[in-house]
Every structure is written in structure tokens, then in C-alpha cells.
Image (cartoon, rainbow, N blue to C red; front, side, top):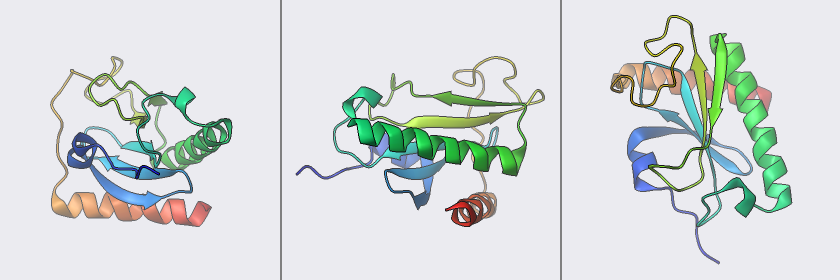
Length: 138
């Protein structure tokens, strides 16, 4: 059995929050937007259709749960979900809280503005907030 390994670029661009039954939950290090990714802990997959039917169901359940957490914590005007994989082929599902006053609104976030890294204190607080909300709901 091949072991799941997080893509080095995803590891570099994000911080671990917690693990759910299928996915690891990570915070993208960009303070422009509350932005989480779900990465299924399954080796060598790039597309949702490569997951088993049961894993696909679990992925969508976990995505809906994370969407609810983000919505409750940040009250976005819109929640963007995406599984692009153009730069990082490993399957990962973006959950991005968007606001009418964010720097990229109404355009997609990619390529609009450089990432605004959190300070060490900010990222710890953000992770703690999200982890507590996830743990409350699981």
C-alpha cells in the first residue's frame, strides 16, 4: 500500500489545522481571505473520480461540514469552492470565504493580488479558532 504524502507546495503554502476521517484540513497562509483546503489522505490521486464512491461521499460530506464552519465563523458574502489542480495536481478542494470588500471581489482570487502571509500570532489564532469550531461540530 502506497502511503499518502502531502504535496510539498501545499505543505509550504498552508498550515495544518486538523484531520477528518478522509481529509486533512489546512489553512492557506493568505490573510486576504479565510481560505481552507481539504486534502484527501489518499495516495497518488488528482481527480475526485479517482476516489472510491464511498470516499467521494465522505469528501462531499466533509466539504459541506467545512463550508458550514467557515460560514458560521466568517459570514462571507459568498463561499467559493474549487478543485483546480493546475499548479498542484494532488487533489485538494479549496474553500474560500469571499466578501464584497475583499481585495479581489468580484473576480477569482488567483493571480489578482500577492498572498498576504499571516504573522505567527495571527496564524496561531486563526488555526485555534477554526480548530475549535471543527471540534465542536465533530
